[in-house]
Image 1 (cartoon, helix red, strand yellow):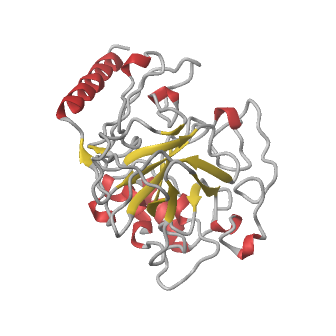
Image 2 (image 1 turned 180 degrees about the horizontal axis):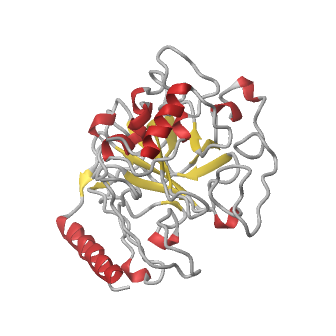
Length: 325
């Protein structure tokens, strides 16, 4: 049976209602759901991809399946390009209309809702559903990559976080750093953008899919898999998960890979995020690679089982600690 929350969202999607104050997604021509979810229609005002993911089954939240976004890939030959050891830019907005991808960019502004000022202070911002009080408290966002060319072959274990951007989402234009990634297979890779807000509303998560490819002088070291779930380590840095890590999946009916309890060092309820509370460094993640020369035709290589065992021990230890709080 569908949850009440999910039923409401599906009704909104089917009715085509425009939630101008809705939430955030990363926008680029290489994204899934760029044109909306109506076959044959290029919707300049679409916002389906920004709907939050909360209390859903993994089948439904994985790459935003519950409203069909995963069924609408970018146009053939269009990719999010990731220059190895360089940078790439996307737009963080509540609706395609407020990006350069609609109306010739006539509605763009500093922020992703078409405004040049959204306020900010000690109270939660309400002009836009950005889940923060100000820029310094924005939870952070991330991109992950899977060296698979088909979305159906992507799993949490082969989708590896390769870059983070602290204090986002905030302004519309967001630029991310790229580590020395190896080349993708001939059909390209699959990437995902993720965001887990820290308070100021429903404790949900966001996930946007992309077809992507690595460009420039690519690396020779493969991204190792399986990726390991991140762990809470704000108060105990020695317990941080290191190496290739999964995206954050939480507060769903199933498929979660992290559980946090208690309070953070600010005295607020703990919330996982793409920042230092889970041990993520800002920018390109450089600890995700195997040895030089291990990349072959753009593929992941298995991480040594000794490393998997060590990370599993750390995760188990953290879970025990949480139950004792």
